[in-house]
Amino acid sequence: MRRRDFIRLLSTAAITSASSVGLSQQATKLPKLGYLSDEASRPHLFHSQDNIAKGLHERGFDDGRNILIEYRYAAGKADQLPALANELAALPVDVILAVGTPAARAAQAATKTIPIIFCRIGDPVEYGLVTSLAHPGGNATGVTVFTVALAEKRVEVLRDAVPGLGRLASLHDPTFPPGQIELGQITAAAAALNVQVHAIGARSSDALDEALSDVMKDSPEALFIGSAALFEDNPQRIVDFAFKTKLPALYIRREYAEIGGVMSYGIDFREMYRNAAQYIARALKGEKPADLPVIQPAKIDLVINLKTMKALGLTTTPPLLARADEVIE
Picture 1 (cartoon, rainbow, N blue to C red):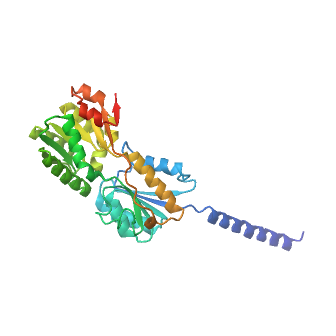
Picture 2: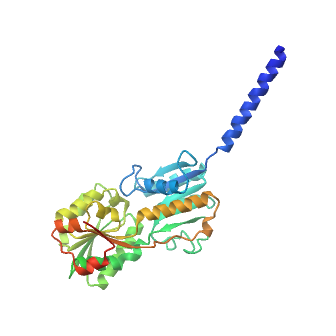
Picture 3: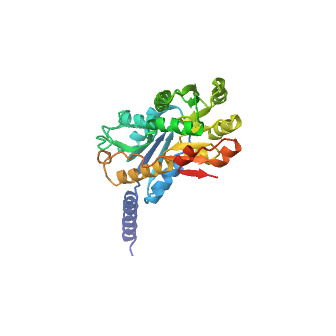
């Protein structure tokens, strides 16, 4: 073979190889999920990350294999969420998962075109995220926890646990708007049942110990732990405090009862995250959020840790046991 023909052959092979690489890269371009949350970056007992990953895996999506996930965590600093949402929109990503009301609001302000799937939301209609639960009407839909609608039942559960309940302490985060709504509803529900509520606010992890000390100032007969990422970042501190003070405490998530809390009454957050993953998968496949009704919780569970109740010397009343969906012994 002449030298000139050999060089031409090499050049042709190089061009063909380069074209093949380019086509291969295009063919393997993976969809991107923007993960926007007010949580800390480190996964923990209450964290959404592992549950979302499990839900996506169940639907055939694994990070790094056939989907790329861009994580943005605000670590409890809600004022950082708008900038983080804008980062994700500018990449751009194909779908945004928004964990929590502040994250959902930030995502919606950042884009009107990228599909948004939200979760851990109290009332998306009231917060202006969707037009209605059945017909979201925009680029956002997801899963609601409807936590704020459970106030009356939660006070009833506490009254069953403490017959004659007159004073209830409620721990909340004043910087978390859904928690403030929840506190208002708990207070109204308690008043209707002749129960006084002593509200104690904790704004940061550093202020939590002082807030817990304030719980006992009004000699409460029971304790309600409200919705807040702050409390979910410090579950053992709160459970240990309730155990030390022998207060019958009611939590909104079953994970508290699983680590020694007296009882919880609320939805299964793990199932909520799996439902969110279902909608992420459907959005990645081209379905529009406007056509996907907001998923509402199918079941509310009362979980009682009987072992803790016995250790505290608390009496399990028949009305309380009758309500229980699960008893941890």
